[in-house]
Length: 243
Ligand code: BTN
Image (cartoon, rainbow, N blue to C red; front, side, top):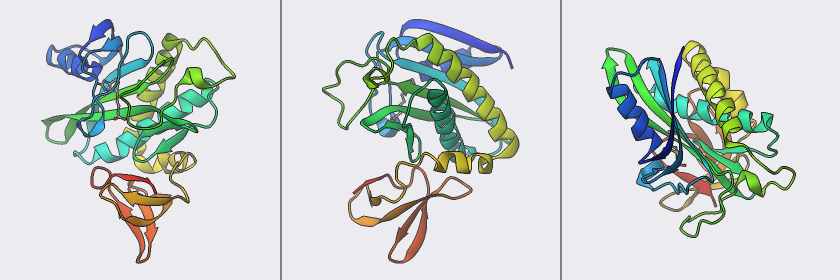
């Protein structure tokens, strides 16, 4: 399908920009990239640090047949697409933190924000998938967790954001197509091979050790083995972290 690409110097949020493109009736798959965002947003209502020229901020509008439940699987699928793209570009040690944070050994490298635009008609949903990758981020005093950037990988310098963006766009669209055809199960193994939580003691956001991470099921729920057996956790229900 044809891509309708907007390359912007500054924008509130590339996710919002894609929404605007859709409401203006843009033809094809709307994709937006910006050099900086003034109101970049992350999951759970958090802001996403978006300094000018340092990182990658990219969003795409995707349409799927199915109900709102496609969202759960989709965010994991996009994580796999980002991880595979980075690996192909020579980034070692990429891991996925359920549901869809991108990690390097030093900390979070990027994140994915999947937003639902709504049901277009019976059985057709549109989502805006936004991806942020730290490329040259120089400082982040206001980021509340360990983070990393591609420039922090010693083996390679001179990361081209254009090159990463074009590889990412192809990978995202291709993965979304495979997901639409085959469902999430086609990605289960690919996701698990990069599972940051595997074998780790995990706690739920509210506190309390709940068990050891043991991968995902066919729907993309995270499996935690605790005293009472293996419990599947649905994305959005509980937030997990390493104890
Ligand atoms: C997270 O909380 O981990 C998700 C972060 C997603 C950030 C990206 S940057 C491009 C797109 N535009 C936004 O406002 N957010 C996403």
